[in-house]
Amino acid sequence: MAAPAPAPPATSAPPPAREIWFAAWPVVAIFILSNAAMPLYAVWQRQLGFGSGTLTLIYAAYVVGLLGALLVAGVASDRVGRKPVLVPALLLGIVACLIYATAPSVAALATARLLTGVATGAAVSAGMAAVTDIAAGRSLGPLLASTGMVLGAGIGPVLAGVLSETAPAPTVTVFVVEAVLLATALVAVIRMPLPQRRTGSGTGSGTRSGTGTATGSWVRLPAVPRANRRHLALGLAAFAPGISATAFVLSLGPSLLAGLLGTANRAVAGGMALAMFLAATGVQFALRRLAVRTILLTSGAATVAGTLALVTAVHTAALAPLVAAVILAGAGQGAGQLGGLTLLSREVPATRRAEANAALNAGGYFLAGALPVADGYLSDAIGLPAAATTFGLAVAALATAGAALVAVRGADAR
Image (tube, rainbow, N blue to C red; front, side, top):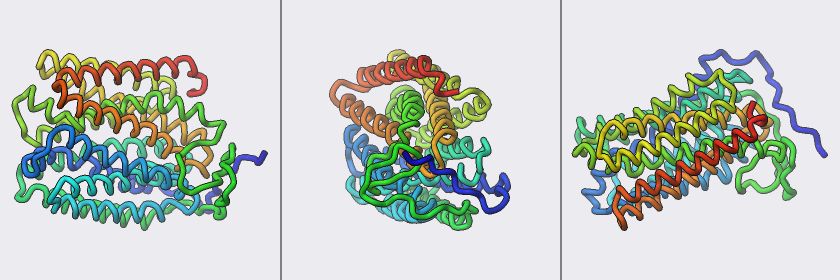
């Protein structure tokens, strides 16, 4: 059996800490795009005339694009480098902005969401791996890679919500601004001081190695070396239910908010999403020095509490449990993401790091895409309260099962 491939040696002193922050900006910018459409769905629904089921299908187009990108982005990034994956992804993001700004139909919106998903898939594999590469083993790397994702996801809705309420031509203004942000991220990628990578990683038709070297097809389900499968399973046990809870807030949250508060103000909807992702960011800084097992268990507890608060809000039409659900859902995703990413960045060889990130996100986003779509159609059939209750209880059950797995196999998540 071949020995695990060592991390590519640095040819000079590690870059200063500020370079890690700069490297996180492309992740932030792409995730701003990923959720910038959220407050504008009401505008498009009014203009184009579609219901909750179609809305969740548009959201699902994003998940399809993301999962499709994860089939190749992680492997490609590990083999040819981070920049050759990130540059095309950012250009696709700019194209998506142009389509959003002029979308004449549901098909155009779905296309823009699909391209957004592709760009996001590159960000969660190559982009987050680039941050940890530049960090050169410093704990700031996984922390900024993870918080960059959730912070961008939170900024997107509130930026779009405020601009759409205060600026003329809301859909045009929002995505022109986002295109400019992506252009600055493109500059950041070009100047990244990435460590020199080895070339010639296996590209033949053989099977994937059980060690640190990736071989086989360039397009495949992302995975990790055999020795790291338990680490991936532990990360997914917390991350997948957590991101499913936040996906519900992003896809159908504005409808629930309108029903409880009687408002369709897009800035309010964006503020709700920002609060959720600020909680996801804050919890990661608060927990960063704890053991990974503790972080993952915290994620499970927050996700269960958040979904139960959501069910309470639906049945009591009260604002306090809705606010609690938003904050706890963000905390659940943030903790699960930090725990999973930290575990993989610590245990998986650098030559498989981007693919490992892709595998974690593929599992999480698959569940996060399937459950809200089902819930959207269930809402049209039996009403939002009953559908939200069904969804909340399902996610709570998954989070409980995931926490039990972490508790039993905690030795693997020191």
